[in-house]
Length: 222
Image (cartoon, rainbow, N blue to C red):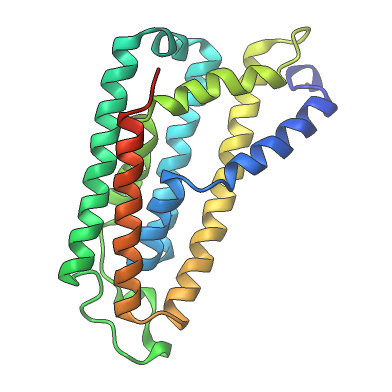
């Protein structure tokens, strides 16, 4: 069984590097922040599940070599990056509109003790899951990342496919654990410390960040 996973030294190196990459801010963390502050940790958790599934799909695709087609096709990369950038712009614009109109938390009372996630309205859990999934599936840089990142920690004298899938799954589980803890922290902070007005301002900033990431993705070079 151990023959199907990378050697201990390479696995340890992967865990360190993957851990640092996992906590690096990006579109995933911005999306989870928006849902954690605006709707609560449950919606943020389902968004994290979607993000994890999107990463797992790309990681598995890279293990099977499917992502090679995307990496080598300028047209496919360009189309996907424009669609992904447009989707991030859409999510960011939605967050800005919600913050400006103040629809995110119309029923939140001023008493901090009563500002729980049950009083916050937002998208359904399934909608949050789909948003997280599409955020990664429509990002060709995720595919290229797995295609270039995983092989560095695969031992050539062992079966490549099982090792690649093992590393991709490990990275996804690390990301899911991190985003869950991150969402829980933000939810607690929102319920205890943040007023409705401050939360709306943070959502506006998050929306702007998502839009900026969308523009960055659309302008990314192959």
